[in-house]
Image (cartoon, rainbow, N blue to C red; front, side, top):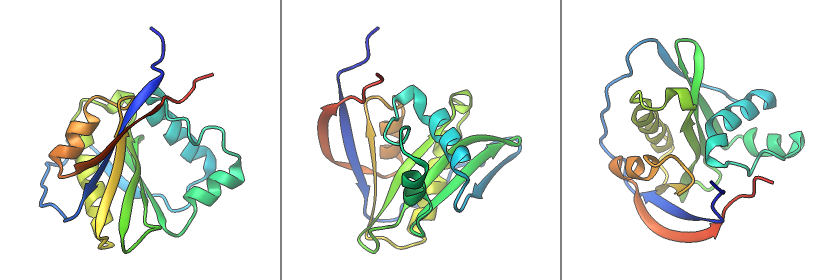
Length: 172
């Protein structure tokens, strides 16, 4: 099967903090802040979560360029651990406060999908973002992401405000 030539990107927003409750995952889990993570660890998270969905924006970045993006004071990264192993991560960007906060990256590693962790992690991300009281919280997803991504965002209170067709990232 050939890779798609285009993708539909859906931009979503949330203008009020929702009242969300989700049961805690079973077993040993922890969501830990990772301020200024080592670049090799960030690259590992980014690749493990995004490789199956053609996340390529940051794969070719030099260390200095990547550090400039993720080590800013306005960026917060959290890692979900399940039974001691990294299972997914959240990246929040508060560069545009007070107008908006962005859920820049969010996802689970493939072996942790289907365990009910996605909704838990998203609810945590939403709560962390609203601590900073933005006027709105934004996120984007595309047709290359997990098929449950868009419905999950909407179930948790995000509303689409724009859809665009864009060229799919090239794997070459």
